[in-house]
Image (tube, rainbow, N blue to C red; front, side):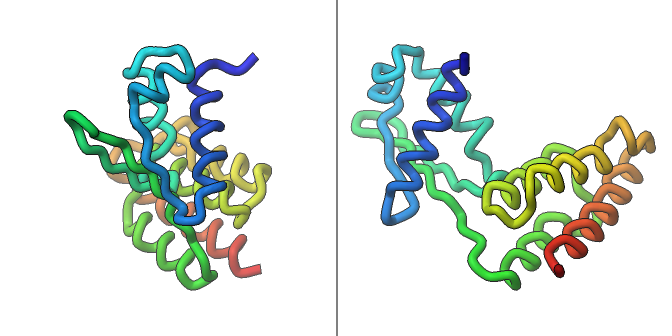
Amino acid sequence: MRNVSEIIEQYLKHVLQQSPEGAIEIQRNDLADQFQCVPSQINYVISTRFTLEKGYVVESKRGGGGYIRIQKIELKSHGSILDHIFRTIHTHIDQVTSEGLIYQLQEGHYISAREANLIKAAISRDVLTFKLPLRDEIRAKILKAMLISLLSR
């Protein structure tokens, strides 16, 4: 059985997918009532599963009538994908950011689940057992090479 966080995440992704604008505005308390959870659970889901690295922009307005707006960033053309990769990776990239980029590419169906798992295994801190910042530099080089190879097919 899935946990509440996964259910909320899937619900929000479904609503986003149905939105013609590619964005939704939600009331945190209303969503918490709908899923019979505390509002901090909604914050947790949004802050961990709807990050910029995973392809989402989140903005919130606090106070009476406040809302949380979630927008999916679409990578439309092949050129924009490569531009996004180079802007994200630079010369160094940490594990969390790299996994977010991989997640975003997998969600957009640019790479398969198998390819995503292979890349994550190759750039894991358990495999790249170098000290920082060398580890993040090597991770960036490996990640760029693998993604360019996969996306240039």
